[in-house]
Image (cartoon, rainbow over all chains, first blue to last red; front, side, top):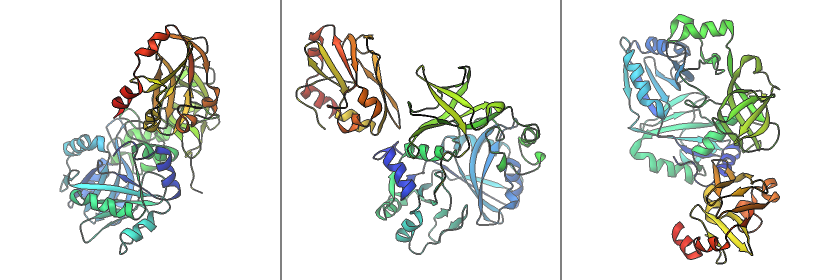
Length: 330
Length: 125
């Protein structure tokens, strides 16, 4: 996927007001099945797998023993004993190695990332695009999954904050399927718009906002850690942090005026100029026309309204902590 | 891509218009098309002395920040306030209202060593 096909601004706008299509073939597709699949995934992932009925999915995290994030992913239950996982591209090998090294009883894991292509159609017109491109197809409810008779998968999810779906098909069908959706009016969108759209929603990006040194409680994702502490790897740390409160939190930060676009790794300072850390993500929000960013801040400063400064090449731009997300659909 | 005949060019996609010993500098049509959506321009401080190829200004699109290099040695005598308030001028009028800064050139003959329009056309083709 390129950074942009035409312009990040135009592509972003297409998703917020019409429909865009992203090539997400780089993402990983794992399949898990067997009588022990549910119990094993419950041990490996933070969210409660047993709460999923066949056809349902949810956001979940895979943690290391110290509660740090290895990866965030979407898990779907496709049958009583079968599951489909969509993982981050950069983490396919690491995830697979971690899962393999903690192999479960009566549960088989298959990495089929190379065999599948994926595309995400996102935006208020996404269902219209689908109706035109695949007239027979009816989407599942939010977070749901449907496998089609011709070997494809539709998931009602996305990474933009808009309605839409992710579609997976055999890799050799990708080009024809892509053309089918673009002919129906979906605007090709690149990685740049994917980043601006997800950051307006405060959806974390693994490798930027999530890391093996930060727990989901610090990242504001405690909601997706549903089970008792002993039930999954890292759960004891999560339970302790939930009880005691984390010392740092991933905060949403917005410029109070115009300024140079914030970007990952720029220093973030308190109002007196003391360095607090660095931005984990940052962009100029195409919707808000303001700099928006995220950073881990001491929990005492993680309150909306806390004044901050963002250092861009030695110039400091005023900003403040705001509530998540930056953007809410009208 | 528009490559005006009366300008000189750098391999890093700046254009230069020399009038007396004052060089006006901006980025080319090709460069603005590659950047797309210019959202911020950081011009240099007036009075700053720069050497050939010093990073002198910054132009930012949504996707990236790009340094603009001095096409020759000299002193910054003016920065364009209009591109600071309306950075999109760099996209819409790169050779006109989208100029970024002016240098008092130390050695005007240095400008003649830059690429002529044909050389720049070959450079971007």
